[in-house]
Image (cartoon, rainbow, N blue to C red):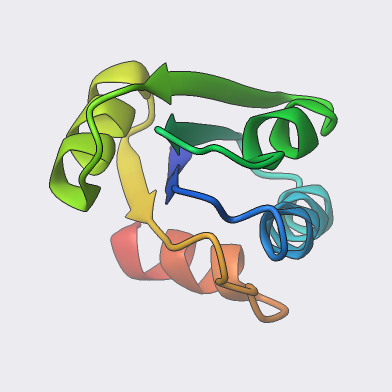
Length: 105
């Protein structure tokens, strides 16, 4: 089963890198099938540039500001069986993906 991480981000340059690093570490550790969709939600800082610097991360621009709008755009852009809606300041703990996979199996 594929997990899509949808991360809305408005001016999150200070934390998006740590968030993406934690998600990518979990994906690698789990060996699972996953994708990461960052929705750059009308940011005026380096959020999109930082997120684009991570291999395998899809960055989608959503110019209409708003969390609900950004999440919906991320859902539409994702292709997973499970959508993990997380925030740009989220840090995944070890085993997070394994736990989700086990619960949904």
